[in-house]
Length: 249
Ligand code: DGL
Image (cartoon, rainbow, N blue to C red; front, side, top):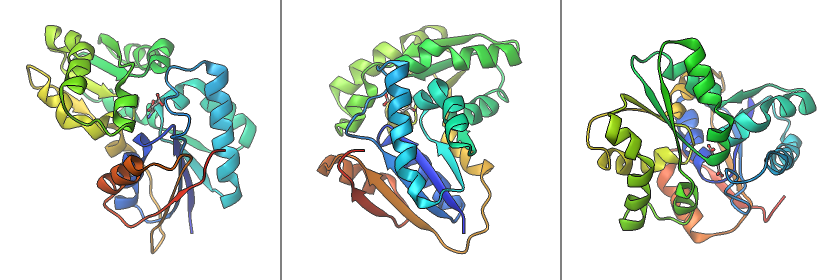
C-alpha cells in the first residue's frame, strides 16, 4: 500500500487529488488549510511555518512521499520541507514547468503574489528555452474561489484585470500556476478574446505518479468546517472520499 500525503492552502489541491486518484489507486491523505487560506499574500516565514504544520499533521499517517499541490508552498519552501522531514516532496510547480516547456511560444504565468514575486516559473522557463514569460498576480482569485464565487460579475471583473496582458498580446500559453484556478478554467477561457493553450499542471502530475495499489482510499482533511467547502469538494471529486473537518493545526 502506498500512503501519499498531498496538501494545499485550501481547496485548489482537491482538484489535483481528484486527477491523481482517478488515475492511480493509493491511500491518499489530503490536507487543505482552509482556515488560514490564502497563503499567497503571506510572508515566506509564515508560509514556511504553515506548511510545516501541515506536514507535521500528515506525518502520523506513515506517509511514503508527499505531493505539494500548492504552487505558493512549492516555490517558497520545498527545499526546507525536504531537509526537515527527509522525505520526497514532488511539487506541482516543477511538474508544471516541465510540461509547459514542451509547448511553442510565449507564456503567461497566472499565480498568487508569492509565486509571482519568486519569478520561479519565469526564471525556469526562460533559462530552458527561447521564450518570454509574462506574469500576472491574481491577488483575489483564491479568496473568491474559496468563498464559492465561481461565476458572475465580480469574478469576471477580476479575471479581466488579470488577463488583460494576455488579451492584449495574445500570449499563446497560459499556465494556471495556482492549483485553485483550474476550478474556474471555463470562466478563464470565456474572458479571453482569443484561443489560448491553457495549461493545467494537475493533468501532467497525474501522469507522473505510478502506484500499484488495488484500491483507493481517499481521506480529505480540512481545517475549517464550512458548507461551501463541503459542496465544492463534492463538485470537484469524481471518486469516493471521506471528508473530515479537523478544526485547525
Ligand atoms: N492553491 C495555492 C497555489 O497553488 C493557492 C495559494 C493561496 O492560498 O493563496 O498557489
